[in-house]
Image 1: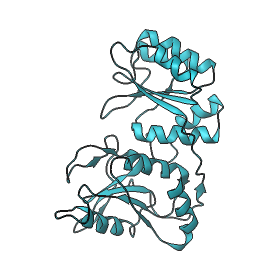
Image 2: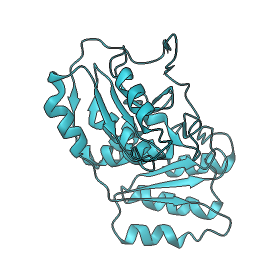
Image 3: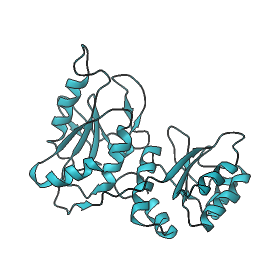
Image 4: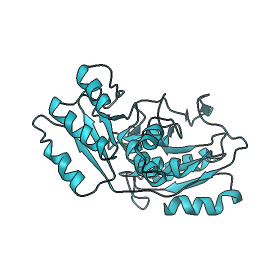
Amino acid sequence: TQIARKIHELYDLYDGFVIAHGTDTMAYTASAISFALQNLNKPIVLTGSLVPLNEIGSDGRNNLIYACLTATLDIAEVCIVLSNHIIRGNRAKKFHESFSALFHSPNFPVLGELGRPIKLEDWRLKRRDRKLKYEPRFDSNISVLKLFPGFDPAIIDKVLARKAHGIILEGFGPGNVPSNIIMQIDKCSKRGIPLVLANQMEKGITNLTSYAVGFEAFEAGAISSKDMTTEACVAKLMWVLAQTRKLSEVKKLMESDLAGEMSI
């Protein structure tokens, strides 16, 4: 929120922004900024390093150069730049503790590569006149749960008992859940608490119509995360809940593409 507010404060003074950030939570921050600052007409670039700048062999210097270069290009979205790849921020996941494969974009192609020449892809969001939508509020009162064999449905009851405003549940395969979870999903819906059903796959789409158990979850009121990363889903649900608590409106926003975070 503080980063988004500072960018909003300085937005008209600069043609692009570079943010130095730790890599562990970078995908969450990039996703959050993409919802807090929508309809961008300039790039916001996050970068970082595995090895601190003051140590021999640091990747930080090159990453910072690449990020500053990206901030001058015809891009108008939140990006992550590490090594020479430009990745849409709300599509990124931290993948590996190595210089060449630190982040990847499992469900969306990279926006470009920095080399000689620089290659930018046509599916990137480009600079053009558009009115910035600034809404930095987030509601962090959510829980993220991962299903596993033997998962106790009472865990969801405990989350509801502590008055969580929303739940993200990572199901099996494309979003399947055991039959004993369907009642819990229905309970959430009746209480007006959104339950977003995601998946645990590194690459894939939550499809609640592929199998009977997924369809039962859909009928009980589960919201599909589609092909969002968990990081983007977390940031988006927090942002949506700060805009509205009405379940039908939350569902509509969560299943809509707001900032390039999902494929419709």
